[in-house]
Length: 129
Image 1 (tube, rainbow, N blue to C red):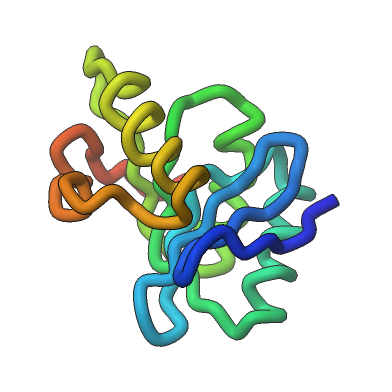
Image 2 (tube, rainbow, N blue to C red):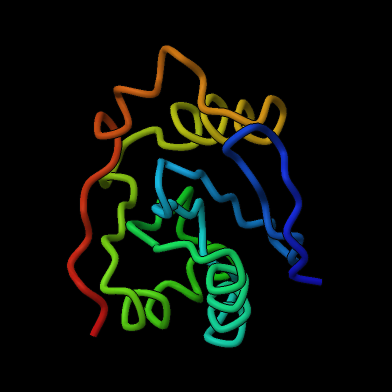
């Protein structure tokens, strides 16, 4: 568990109870899609990031189920990264999960039409306390 699998040229996922996506943005900067189910998952994700000399820039939460957001507080405290989550009352599942996550997992990259529109359905969340 928590093995890193390369899905595309700049995309990976961590094999976990709920897969955690990683997008390599350039240099050592990466973005996570979800963060695992708890602090222990966050620690294991941090170990993967450190083994690859990656710097966590932000976490993109696909939805708010505990098994997808449980590690975000720990990771934000360790990296000071931003966290983005769906705006209230938006059909996030349709716009994000269907398009971006499926394209990411299937093709190993973000779909071209959506790369520049990530902020359309996401808003930055306040720091975890």
